[in-house]
Image (cartoon, rainbow, N blue to C red; front, side, top):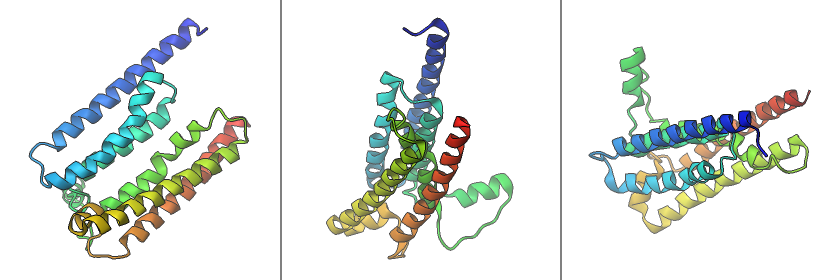
Length: 211
């Protein structure tokens, strides 16, 4: 039986989660008004719906702590922004120039790699918490979460490859290769590196909690 203080905390957390989901819904609606690339954006938002199931299921169960929940939500938000401009044309350089006065003038739009980098950072805590109830060492939980995240990254690149076989023209826009045939490998490498780095950080944090 939960005491009153615990129940109050859970209610507050659930309200925060509701607000987060509302923000994501509003962001999705705003970014789909007068779409620049309607067909490709619709395809991108299939991923949005799939990942959002994590938050919607937890909204009912309320099992996730707030940090992994926010991590997944931030990744969805980053993806929503990318979907508006199908990743390859996100005007982040214009935003940085307007807000901070930075002039990057890159030969390539790197937003897609930023999303892969974010995937390695923001999703790992969620996967780790999925295995929190298992009676195994924390380092083993980190390794399992690491392996699963690596697998998800590879499966996504395989999905993009299959899409290329089915509809090459659509895949070029969806995959955001920007003329680089090795782009998928480079993006996976970026994600792989940050998964490794974040796994080490997560293990150190968990170890300090024990000590």
